[in-house]
Image (cartoon, one colour):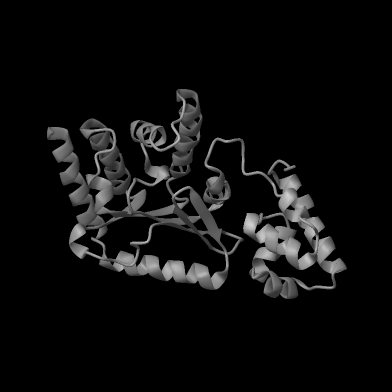
Length: 272
């Protein structure tokens, strides 16, 4: 039985973790070492600011001998309007003050137009009904609203050239999508960098990553693969992800050169 994921339920969950940890005679540092979690992550869970993922909850149950309590009462990730593995990352995305994202195959969700997002959400397996797709579409488009404020979050998008070349939805959809990115980039609302095919192999070949920084919380990284996603909070791991991103950024075109390439490809789609 799961409880709804809201501040009150996370606070109760955190208080129960603290109670059971202290009952076991463990400090946060002790628990972090035994459960292979960072002490800061445990502190944020106990304060109701963060929630563990399923693997974290299993380790907490194992270390504290709580018989599956922390898995059973793990807060749910939403109401089916986003993929389950993305629920926690979505909440963090809304709180972030700085976001740097790498898109290896598709335009990152925050930057997607309605037509492009509709095509993406209508693909995949198993097939979705129009109603299911439309529910996901509402959430996808709402994500883009975080860019309505010109100053926050600071947003950098690093795109593989494959993102620009893959004709999702056809030429008209792609032309509109690329011009949307151009508009955001030319207005300096976002920074855009493209990793061109000519670079060959690069540090970010393994897949999607989103780096997020906050006002009063430590930074996190979110990585994603097929039907999976994970928020990484261990400081050393987050720093590694940041270093890999920086390495990829070093191989990318400048903001100005990237916009020129995007403009050129948009014109190709326009004339197709």
